[in-house]
Length: 310
Ligand SMILES: [Zn+2]
Image 1 (cartoon, rainbow, N blue to C red):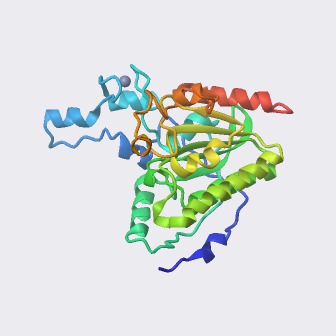
Image 2: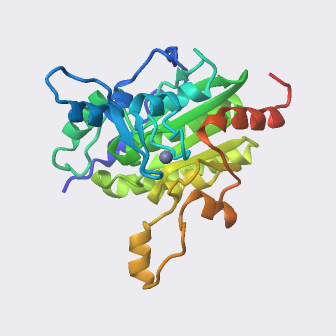
Image 3: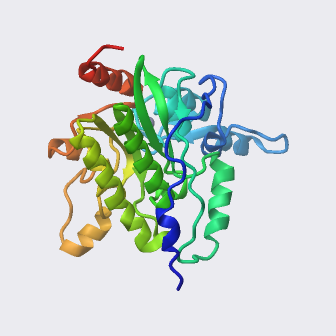
């Protein structure tokens, strides 16, 4: 087995921004979005197939809604408030001031250190499907007029798993926030470390954590927002190192999954174990914020910590 460690330490151009404004929220459906809630109906389908394709049954309240209705409500159930998965792009559009997002320049070349079969093809097809180059999107933006560095993970890209590229993009975002003295906001969504990259993906835990510690020592403000699901190596590194930790309602947040824990300790786990509400009750989460209140909550925190106003 050949370990291609050399590439790990090759840092591409880590700073500077390139202007790629996100488009108007109302008119855009990204590739990532389309793959989840498609309302495209072809002509040669019978009525029940059409209904199935244009409607969704909420997994929580079991009521049936049109997919468009859910999409228009930030992918949140209009009856019970169940938070569906949302694309990184749509989340950003809901958070930042229109036209202010500028992706940080941080291109990480693809590596397959374990020569994992079909890994590159999988990445290429996900890039095509989601419109993302990796499982995290990072850049600078204004939120209610306040400048910030924002990184958003996508669970739709290989379960938001953290490999070399995700570790580098997160680290780059933290370092950029540190250098420019900007607040840092990271939305996590991850199945954990990326098994296809073996030990090198675990090393990203140390790398990102070290960057956050340096940022913290220099007085930076880091708001971590945990979304469904945040697990494994991401929970065990930068996701839980925020100065302020927010979470979306009922998100699964943990290290190992509940079934593994039950099997290990031989006990039944309490109701709601590893959900946002349970974690808030036990002091790991500061506030649970529904998606439609996320922008105003983060803007409020930024305002409280701002020295000079906007
Ligand atoms: Zn519902």
